[in-house]
Length: 349
Image (cartoon, rainbow, N blue to C red; front, side, top):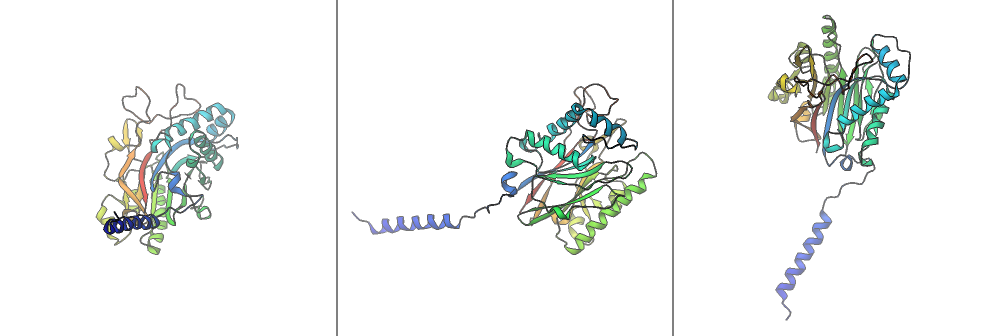
């Protein structure tokens, strides 16, 4: 028997299903879509001092430090492949086997060296959608031919890549996902080999803060990350005063003046230490973010996710120090680097 009420209910239900499907949000199709390449809108960033990553060409470097690695890795392809293999192995253990979506490295000789590592990574990635597509780098010569580089699978604004002159090992790269821009500044500050080098580290901090402050004044909501091997701790003058790095979340969010949230500011070196010298742990490798990275607009940083990947130590080392790859004169099994990597989770809204 025909039942008008039941018929009307079924008709109404069917209509709602059709309309609901029609209104369902659709992901825009894009050959450069980051969401399919990196597991949705959640991304992993890593900074790592790669410890003398040189390429396969002998460029006739004569400077102290450069000469050894330039000749050695160019003339011993099996050693270079071992170096690339160790770095790739460690990186591809991160992010559920995909590797970090954004990799910032220090101590890279050339674009060619970055290309070799990118090729080694892509050769081991099981899904071509996860391939690393972009290398952001400007080679510099500041005593040593070791520069920072950004390698990423995410879309970039290539022509906005810049360095800060030949006096500074700093690279600025621009990543753009779904029209949300992230500025990444990666750097390797002056070493601690000489006491007078402290001035140089303060100059690095001033240079970076000046660039960040200019971006902030133009757009207080700008999303940027500063990362690097600073050769200073979060408490040192260069980082705390000149770079305006702080662990005070409220002070960073206040906006009275630009302060950067240092994700390592309150961390215990025994747990988060990235470098070990003379049995002393220090946090030299750090990540700082702009106030704009602390809201749910554009890019957001999960500041609680900061992690030192401190598993890359030599078996049997009771101090669990970074297992360095070493140089030509070192013997025995080789490790990864004399620094541990640091990672942090990012989200695009």
